[in-house]
Image (cartoon, rainbow, N blue to C red):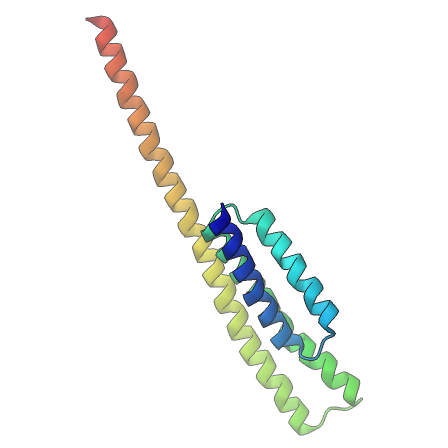
Length: 143
């Protein structure tokens, strides 16, 4: 259990760092609130180490998807009409943000599928063992 908590804390650090890189200059209190919120979420949802990192990847994907929006908001604050340099910055954020978000969301979804497949295989193996045990008990009672 403590290893899962440790991984939740590490995952929260990774997600918070990604969030901070996306949004840039934010007050330390806001970044700390995000870190605590993500840590709490990963403690709540992360019943295994695999689930912790799957959720962390999905949260990184969400932060990456927010990157173009954050860039557009920051450019809009500076000028009513963006310059060519600012438009290039927005384009870079859109392309890189889209690529990153698709990667992280796909990776997180793949981890969830892998976990589900392993759980189903374990359940099937357990059911087979139980069926064999029942069959042995029934054959012993018939003798």
